[in-house]
Length: 166
Figure 1 (cartoon, helix red, strand yellow):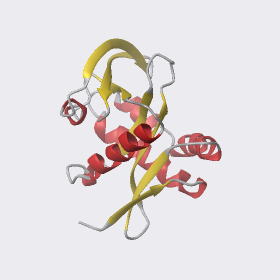
Figure 2 (figure 1 turned 90 degrees about the vertical axis):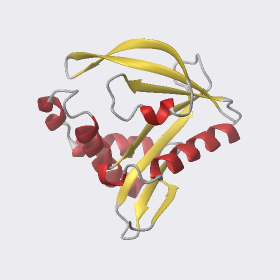
Figure 3 (figure 1 turned 120 degrees about the vertical axis):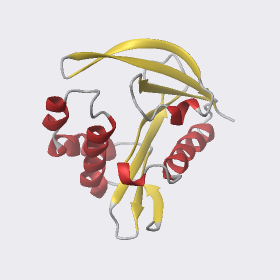
Figure 4 (figure 1 turned 45 degrees about the vertical axis):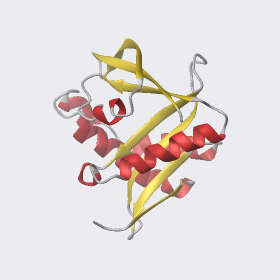
């Protein structure tokens, strides 16, 4: 395995973040979300969203390998609905780097970052059919609610998890 490092994301990371974001969706949700929708995802459009995010105040960290390629990221902050404290907005890792402990390190950065900001819990949304949801369940969160999420015109069950931060 190549060496890797985790650092705070900057504006120049937008293309790498977009690539990881789209490619992770295509592998993680293959066979769950329609292939037509997954192939319609645009790296260019996602890059513009990342430019917007990174242009403001953000808590996004990238993981890059020794050649500078971004292979994963985590993004977190205040929970968006106002019902809970902190929230894990997104955590994605290219498929070939999963299962090597990198995701745990990225998640740890989010948990520590939220704790430093005074949050005692982390809200997590996860697609019920996500094959990687065991990653969250291993941390023993509480399943609070389920909601229907529309992706590409189709409905999916999403689980809302609350994790107490130690």
